[in-house]
Image (cartoon, rainbow, N blue to C red):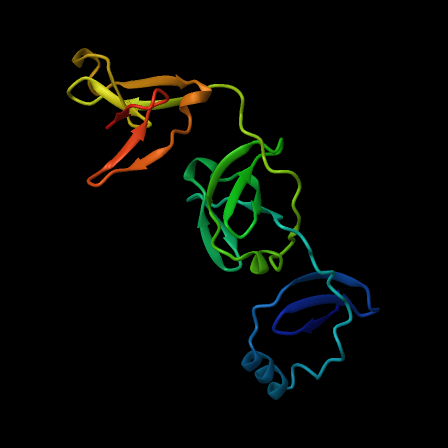
Length: 203
């Protein structure tokens, strides 16, 4: 099927020969690229942009992305690592220019990482839309796995748990209650410490 392309340094629109729009995406071409197309005779000067893109006015936006086999997603030609355990999944990412929150289909939080883009850049992402409410945290206990060291203990969020040398080099699954999933980090003069709920610090 013959198609017509309208290209700028910002947007690329795909039209049928009858003028129907098929798709619009962000353009990766530079002014030099466009000049080269004109000089080669493969393009002609275009009128004003035929399709106006509505401006997104929001404090956050959301995009859907496919997670790669190494746990990254693409945001404006930048690879953002969100975790190899999410490889192959389709994820929704909520971006506010500060934090990138990865959600599942039920809008439950899967991962939160620093946002690599400003809010102004986020609203120009491909298929960006105004964000819905912030994701919720899972209410069920989290199960983690740790390998017991040769001395018979392992650590979870900075807390050392002794199980005995008889379990050395074995994999120990443990369930974390809600209050232990995220502990505040306190920086001392010589090392990081994890604050326990009682207020005492432990290595």
